[in-house]
Each structure stands twice: as structure tokens, then as C-alpha cells.
Length: 474
RNA sequence: CGGGGUGUAGCGCAGUCCGGUUAGCGCACCUGGUUUGGGACCAGGGGGUCGGAGGUUCGAAUCCUCUCACCCCGACCA
Image 1 (tube, rainbow, N blue to C red):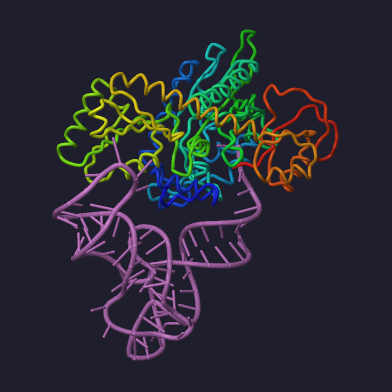
Image 2: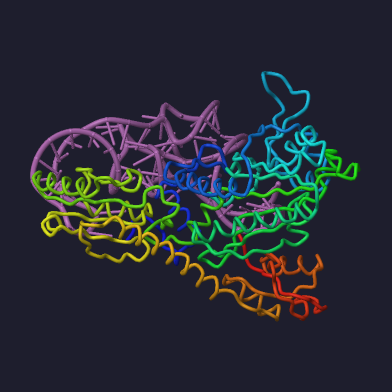
């Protein structure tokens, strides 16, 4: 059993904190609400970046970088945007030993800076579309923070695109939310619900917000990524017009989309267990670790020699031989389990004699003896199997915990225990507020391509045309 | 901002009510030896001035005043 990790049953929140700190993913910093992402955690982020970046570039996007300081006046140009973000902005008022002429906001998101620049770059329909992404840090002064899920400063990517037509901008918005869905499922083994946010929950300044919502082990929802159709809101705020083929001046249509280090929190709460982290193989910076076992110096030499020989020609980043002589094997087993390494290979004198090794998979703990000869393809297949198994488990959890609810009292009771609930909702803000106040849950999204179904609002009983997803959330 | 709580070694805590030699304990750390197929054991060792400031006293981690920080619940939150 794991030492010093609170079990999920005892206290799910504390379990999460224990996992993050003990696996050395991250640590609290001296600044309240800000965390340090340690090598173990940063490696996961690098893999997230690697794969997403490729997906962005394959769909025609390019990376760029914009400044982290935004003149305060920029924020106020879009009315809803400023209302949504002003309360959580950090503002620099002094620099270089003097008070600044105009305060600088530490970006909470970059729409304003980017549209101030796009104004200079766009004149003609020939300048469009612009498909830019940036990897950056942003700062939002949240009152309550949680490691990875909500921190004052966090890392993310933000895509900002400019288009000549509404159709094109909407298509971009939809394309990106589906890229997020694909990434979540294929790489993170984290199934998600794709849908539209309600008017009240949408991004400040957007016409429409699409999101992916994951279901974590405790049944709570996590907004794991968003893609916004911004219409002409920012183009109007920053006066970004282009001349179309009919010689007319027209405001540019826009999208923006992002995922953050929050994904790492989602990954942890999707797959990890009471023994520690469980990393999906496709995100693991170290897929395989060897734990050699010996009693004497002679045995040590023998075992290490065998391990070296059998891994000749393997990718150095694929495996590590944990040859520390001052730590016992049992401890190593536990350490690597805690760190979530997908496959552990035990190799001792007995195995060397039989020319075999013991292969242990992290997700199920299953141990299998395999011959040293021709091991690599088997490990690769096993990694694929682990990846598939994690996704299947997460999918099963989501399916089993997605329910239909038609009676508010029953819903209120049920939602406390977690899970997604498909409910009818009339579309009124007042009913949405009622749900939030009475049940501590929120409408997560209106499912994308959701089936039409006649029904009545769970609150006011007025007609509803489709079901929405409601749940408790992080 | 309202309610509650905590500050003593890197971490977790005891000691505080009822002031009294050198401030303890567990984990971690360091050295040596024995160990090594699921978190080793023995021996030795280093490290704190008790969140901060002021006061009472022969004497303060302990009592008093002020102050700071952090945590939990609530409010808030792509």
C-alpha cells in the first residue's frame, strides 16, 4: 500500500493533493495560488505541447508570441470582456522606480493585444485568414486555487484566428473543439462531452463558446478546453476591417481557443489510483523503467550487463535502468508506481539465467514473465494496450454515470453523488440560476449534435426542445 | 469581506491551560556497517530560539498588547 497518500475513499480532494505533491508533479510556491511545475509534471506538459502543436500545424496554424503586458485601456474596449476579466486581473502600476503613465495588465488572455495587432496586419480579404497560436502563461487572480485545476498563473496555448466570413470562423471554432476532443481521447485517454456553453457560462466577449467537458473519477465535470466564436465583437472593439471582393469594408470574423495545464489535473483525476499517478503511455516522458535486483557485486554486474545488452539500440528516451545501489528494489517499485510509469521491468539473477524478465503494467498491476529476446515490440504493444484500457475504463465510467433526470428534487439529491445528468431546460437564465443555487451544480453544456427531444424544463416546466448536461464541476 | 482554525528543525507534531536548568518526538537528512525478488536494520551524527514587534517578570515557546502570514467553510471563479 502507498505510504502517506490519503485514499480516494477517505478524502478525494486530499488524495489529489497528495498525488500531485508526492509524485513530484508540482509544489506550492511562496506566492499564494501559484505553483511550481516540477520536472515530472513539466514532462507531461511538454508531451501535451508536442502533440497538440503538431495537430495545430497540420491544420494550418502557426505559432507566434505576444507580450504579457497589456495596456489597461485595451481591456475596456470590449464591454463584456472587461466585465468578465477586470475583477481577476493583476495590474502593474509601477516600474523602473516610477509610477507608469498607464497601468499594464498582466494578460488574463490575449484577445485585446492580438486584435490591436491584427488591426495593423489586415487590410484586404487577401490578408485572411490569419491562423495564429501562442504558447504562453496567463494570470487570473482567482479567489480559490487548486493545483493544476485553477492556479493564479497558468500555462496554456491560445489560438486566435481572423476570417473573412462568419461561416469560415464558425467552421474554425468547431474544428478546434474537435481537435481538443480527439487529443483528449487519443492521447489523454480522457473521453469528453462536446457542447455549447449557455449564454451565462460563455466566454466574456464571445458570441458562442464550445467546450469539452470531462468526467473525473468523483463524477464531477471538468471544463477541459474551450473554443469560442467571437463574431465581429473584437473586430469592432479594435476597428479591424478589411475590404472584400465587392470593394466593401467589412469587420473581420474571429475565433479563439485554448487548453491549459488544467489538462494535467484532468489526467490525474481520470486515471490515477491510491498507489499514485497513472500516466497514459502517450503522455509519459518515460514509458519503461527497469528495476534490477541483486544481492552481491557479482550479481549486480551480471544483471546490469544483461539489462544493457537487451536494451542495445533502444531509444534512450524510451527506458531507464534504475541502477541506484543505495535503494532497495521494493522502494523502487513503490517510487515508480507513485510516479505513474506505465511499465516496470524487474530483472534479477534468476531472470538472467532463464533469459527472461518480469513485466509489470501500472494500470492493472498485472505481472507477466517475458523472454528477453524480442521484447521491444511486445512492450510497444503493451503500451498501446494500457492506453486503450485507460480510455475504455474512463469511457465506461462516463457512460455508467450519465443519467436522465426529469424531477428537480430527485436531480438535486442525485447530482450530489456526482455524474452527468441530462435534463430539460427552457433556456431561461432564471431557471439556470435556480439550478445553480439549489443544487450546487451547473449546466455544463448543450451537447453538440444533441438529439431533439420534446420535454419540459426541469424547473419551470415550460417547453424544452432538447436535453442539456448538468453536473457538479471543478 | 463574514465565520472558524493554525503558526515550534525540510515535513508532521508534542510542550502553552498551571512561566523555571541545555526546547522534545516521528519522518527526512549525513557517516559507518550489515542488507537488497514489494517502502531494510543497527550504531553514531547535524540542524530549530519557538511567525514578528513590544510589554510583564529574577526568568517567557508558555502570560498581556499589537501585528503578519497561512489553512478550512462561505461569497467569487474561461
